[in-house]
Length: 209
Image (cartoon, rainbow, N blue to C red; front, side, top):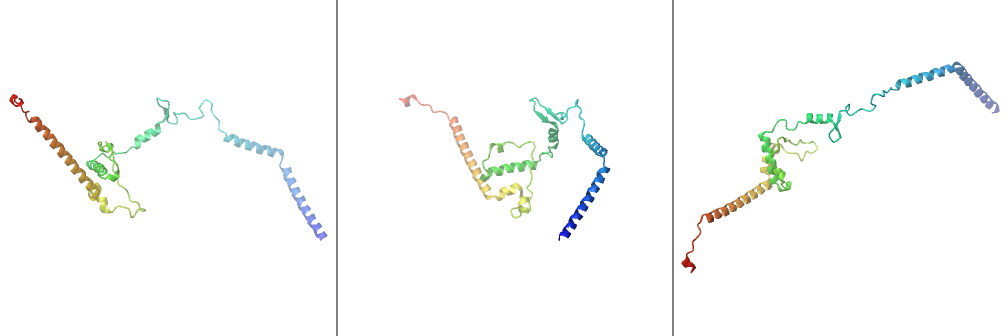
């Protein structure tokens, strides 16, 4: 066992000595000049990556180059975004047709006639705007059982109002109440006019005695 261990140590020493000889030969080949050349190449590469800055010019972009200007209050305003907004507005370009006006009035009437829609505000009584659009809901495949049928789609707003019993009852109730109020007002007005037309009775002096 001792002889075998000695042989192993000798083999290891020989391999180590061979490796050291190889390293020495490599070091002899590479001189100091080679290291200097490598440093110069790395420095040249770094210099190429450096960008020269002209001090006469501004480093940061100005507001004019970014399309920004200052308004009267001194705040920055982006001219590009304002121009885009003006160009992208296509609301109501096709014009307002009679059908659209009728549909909008029916929608307001439906809101007024249906108490579940909430209180009918004063803004709903105002005239229609110059530009507006009316769209339709697009069915989604996930909402299969709640989608409208083809008959319900064709009937429109008038069909929705006529098919809703609550709305029809509310309209009948309000119309009868309005007729009743108007009849009472007309009746009182006629009575007042008749009383004004009648001459006042003159009382005789003998009757006073």
